[in-house]
Length: 140
Image (cartoon, rainbow, N blue to C red):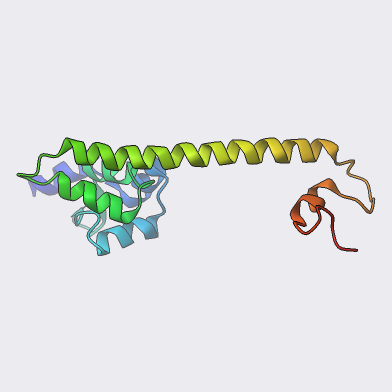
C-alpha cells in the first residue's frame, strides 16, 4: 500500500504527462505497448502514474524510435558508451538545425509573398502563384 501512495504523491497521470511533454496520450500508450516506455505504476483505481524517468524519455521524442531504442540500449548496465550516445545526439542536432534552416527560409519566402498580396480579387495572387511550380504562375 505504501508504494501506491508514493506513486500517487510522486507520479502524474497520463494526461498531465501528455501536457508536460507535448506527446499525445495515445502515443504514450503506444510507446508503452512497443516497450519504448516501461509499464507505468498504477493507482488503486488502475490509473497509470508516471514519474521523472518517463518524462525524460518523452522529452527525447524528437528522436526517431530507432534512435531512442539505441540510446536506451546504450544506457543499460555494462554498456558505457558516451561517444556513441554523443554521435546519435549530434546527428539528431544536425537534423534539427537543418529543419530550422529550412523553416527560416520558408518563413522569409511566405512573409515576402504575403507582403506582395493585395488581398483583393485579382487574377494574380502571389500566394497561389508560389504553389504553381510549373511557371511560377497559376494555370488559367
